[in-house]
Image: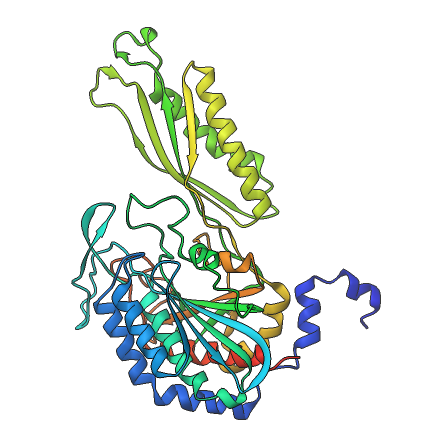
Length: 442
C-alpha cells in the first residue's frame, strides 16, 4: 500500500505520471488525426523529397523558407518571415481561447556529399567556411520540415477543436555556422529565434520538437524525462613556447611536449575529477596542429576539441577545470596556454519532467504502444535554447524500416544517412496529437 511518506520520496517524474496516466487524447480525435495525416501522406513525402534534393546550409535556407512560408499562407496562418535570419513562424489561432503551444522544426542541411542512391539524391553545392562543398540533408531536417508543414495543415483543418494557439517554428542554423565571418552569437539558430521574440506575442506555454533517428525502428518514438541530449562546447587550446633547433631543445620551450601533457591531463578531468555517478561526460581532442619540420621545435601548437555534459552545473565546472588544467600544465614547462570556447555553445537538452509525464499517455496511444524510453545521447541540439525559457519536450522519431537493423543503420551526419519515409506520418500524427492534448488540458 502506498502511503503519503512514500509519495514524498518518489521522483517528480513518477509523481507526475501517477497524476496524469489516465489522461490521453481520446479515440475519435486520434482517428480523425490518423485519417487526415493519411490523406496527405503522399504530399508530405513530396515536400520531403523536394527539400532533400535542394538542401541549403545554415542561414542560407532561402528556398526552403520560401516554400514553408507560401504553404503556411495558403493555410491562412499569420506568417512572419526572416525571423532570427531565415526563420519562419506561423501562428494558428484556435476557435476557442486557451494556452499557446509551439512546435519546432529545423531546416538546414550539412556540408556532406550524399552517397545514397536515390532518384531525389542531392547534387547541390554550397559555401561553407569560405569554400565550396557538397551539401546533403544528412540529419533528417528535410523530414522535420515536411512533418511540421503537414502538422500545420492537419491542425488548420481541426481549428474548431483547438482551445488556444499553435505556433509553428521553422528554424535555421541548428547545425551551427556556415560562414567563418559570422559574428559570435549568430550561429545557433534557436538562440537567434529566441532573441527575435519567437516565444512571445503570444507567449508560449510549452514547446515540442522531434528528431529522426535511424537507431530506432520506424513507428517508434523514444522519450526521456530530464537530460536526453548533451551540451556541446567546442574549444581550441593554443600552446605557445619558444622555437628552437630540435637538437638543442634546452634553448627553447617545447609546446609539443606541453600539448601532449595537456591532452593527458584533460582526460583526468573526466576520469578523476567529475562525479560520473551523477551524469556522464565526454572530452575529446579531435585535432592537433603544429610544426612543419622534423628538426625544428615550433613556436606554438593548436588543439581543437569538444566536451559533452548532461548537467548545467557540471558543464560550467568542467569548462573551468579545462582552463585551469591547460594553463597550469603549460606554465609548469615555461610555456603558456590560451583556452577559448566557441560562444555560445549548446546547452544540454533537458526535458521538463512533468510535461513529459503528462504527454506520455498520448505518445503511447498515437504510436499504438511503441513509445520507448530513450538512452541519453551525447549528441547536442539547440532545442535546449527554447527549454531555457519555457517547459519543453524533445523526442526521437524512429527512422529505420522493416528488414533493416537499427543498430547498424547509417547514423545522423553520415553520407549514407537514410530514412524510411513511413516515419513522416508517425511524426505528423504525434506532433498533432501532442498539440491538441496539451491545449485540451485545463
